[in-house]
Image 1: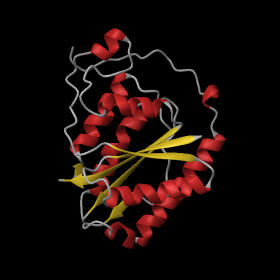
Image 2: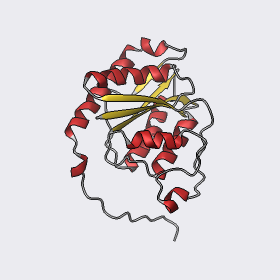
Image 3: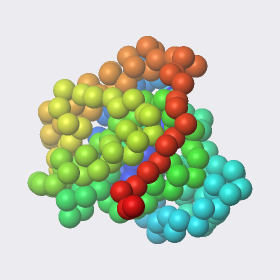
Image 4: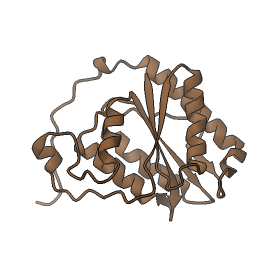
Amino acid sequence: MKVLLINGSPRKKGNTNLALEEAAKTLQAEGIETEIAWIGNKAVRGCIACGNCKQTGSGKCVFKDDVCNDMIDKMNGADALIVGAPVYYGVPAGQTIALIQRMFFAGADIHNKPAAAVCVCRRGGATAAFQTLQMPFQMMNMPVVTSQYWNIVYGREEGQAALDTEGMQTMRTLAHNMAWMLRSLDRTQAPAREEWQPMHFIR
C-alpha cells in the first residue's frame, strides 16, 4: 500500500512539509509506503473548463507545462491521498486548489481511495481552509480520514511547526487512522454507484 502526500506549499522544506513528514514517518512505521510530492514554486494553471480531458478520455489535463499530469500519474499509483497546504488569506494556497481541481476533473484514479487534508497557518483561517480542501474528497466518493482534532498545524517561520506538539500528535493520529482504514477497506467491494442525475435550479 502507498500513500501520496502532496505538499502544496511554495516552500519545499517549510512547515507544511514538516507536518506531512510527521504523518509519513508514522505511516512508514505502520508498513505503508509513502511519497511526499512537492508541487513546486512555479505557476500552476487553473482549470479553464475546456473539456479536452473528457472529450479525449485521456485522464490527463491538456496543459502539460506544470505539475498536474505528473501528480495524476502519482495519484494513479497510490492507494490514498493526503493534501497539505499553507493558509493564505483564510483559504488554502491557490496553487493547491488549482491542482486538485484539475487532477480530479481530468480523471485521476481517486474514487474510494481514503483522503485527508492538512492545513498549516500562522494564526487564523485554518478551519475554513481545512474545510475547503476536504470538500472535493466528499464529492468524489473518497472516504475522509479523521484524527483527534482538525488536521491543523501552527507555525510561521520555517521549523516552527515542530514546536506545535498537539499539531504533530494530530498528524500521527491521522496517519494511524489512515493505515487502519487502508487495511480495512476493499476497493473491489465498493458500492455500485447510481448514474449521476445532475440538475440545477434554473427553470
